[in-house]
Length: 348
View 1 (cartoon, rainbow, N blue to C red):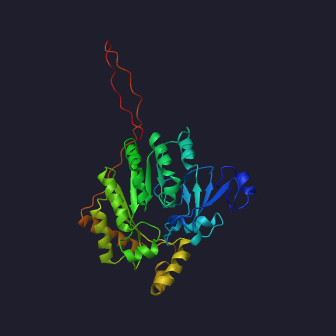
View 2 (view 1 turned 90 degrees about the horizontal axis):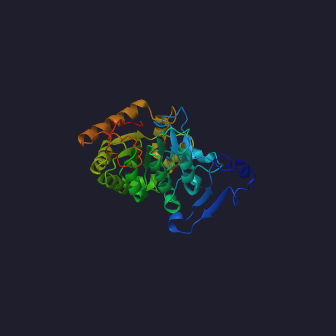
View 3 (view 1 turned 60 degrees about the horizontal axis):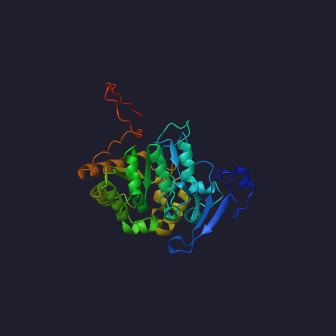
């Protein structure tokens, strides 16, 4: 297993056995929520990752405290990343979870570096940082605290309800920097949810997260992803999903059609063959040109969702707040001399 790109001491990792070495500690927990799951605890050598220039992502830096995800979404594009560690991209991705146990301290050290310019950091864009493992390892409070203390803008995308545990920290961070929260809800159909996203909270529980965050003054958008061709893209299903999202109080809805990158494509198509064999040929035609559905199909779905969002009165995402690093408490002014004219400085 190739741990050397992750381990704090690469030489040690290269010489180590697969498990039981100082570089990697392997654990299992005999509890219902973790039965069948193996955790590989490592002390990573870095935690802030630059997004490749060719990526379609609208951000440049990410933090991923976990690799692999017990959400077990059959379409997850991050499955391919497990092969970099010689781990299986199917069941292995769902049950072999890499935990970067030193993520909070690494991030705090990185943010304090004079070379770091306080750029936006995105989380939950590879695997979910609020998957079930977070309930045991609790890495996110330390991560959010570090970002808050350095007034560093960040965003979180999640399907997990555990984010509400960190509500107070998120509110504190939003007072000093731009904080963007999005919850992923691609559809509200329960039968589809149980088979395609078996390890996630139900769609209505995720929308409860949106409602709670907005009720506490933290604007929350919904990434309506993925819209699954021929399974969740009919007009009535799109309407039901957008209506539920609007009712939750989401600040925005952004549709994203299913894309099937290598690793995810094979796993999803195997699932499709088992559950909806009559759709296999249609998918082969729709995705014949690569990982993404044709532009005409993407534009059609986007247009329908935007029309529905307008119909249900959903507004645009609220503008983020500027970074505001708290200044030291000033000494009492000397009343014998006039105060100098104040000059307001901006950090963005």
